[in-house]
Length: 294
Image (tube, rainbow, N blue to C red; front, side):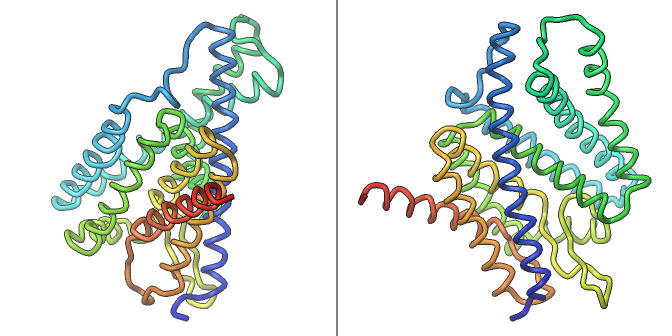
């Protein structure tokens, strides 16, 4: 066994918790959008009727362009600019999380109507803008490792859940297939993912790292994309097909990550999605095969 088994199991538990939490958050907010539509008349156009350009937008604006910009800044050693970009991105995602969280609490917790103009709605509207700033200041100035890990988990749950609401099963399958191939190429062929990992070594932003007690150094690390992308695929089957298919996708993701953790060489970087994505596909294939037979 190359990997510290306790750290590997801990990371698998966190990984599974993120996927389940993402399904819950996506499910709650899919229901929220239907309530918003009923109360305000603003229609939700994502989900089953999701246009294909959402997928193109995610790949280009969410992956290709930011990666190219950060690699360029790394080449010219502009780490201060990179840090500023990271802060802005973190603030943007925290705004999306706070917006949905406050709406969830107001609509489902307090049974509020979004057409009202009361003081309570004004307070919640203010919190939508105040919380992201507070989260960001806390994260980059005051949070210790565990505080950052908690906010990282919130970050990845939010990203995966929000993206899930604007895709469907087909676009999610295509996305994960592309990301799985891309991850393999970026680690073993172009190796630019290793450049990114090296540039951000010691920075807890962008992933979950667990440290060995004796060395106090990160022994296992999982990038944010390796948490968010598997959750997106599981979410789509949960939201648009059924709960059991979503569970099979989660199990496949856990098996894929286990392969990396328990069979990979210590100290070497591996493209986690290159194992996670195919195992999600395999378990979903098994689910439909069993369903067809039964």
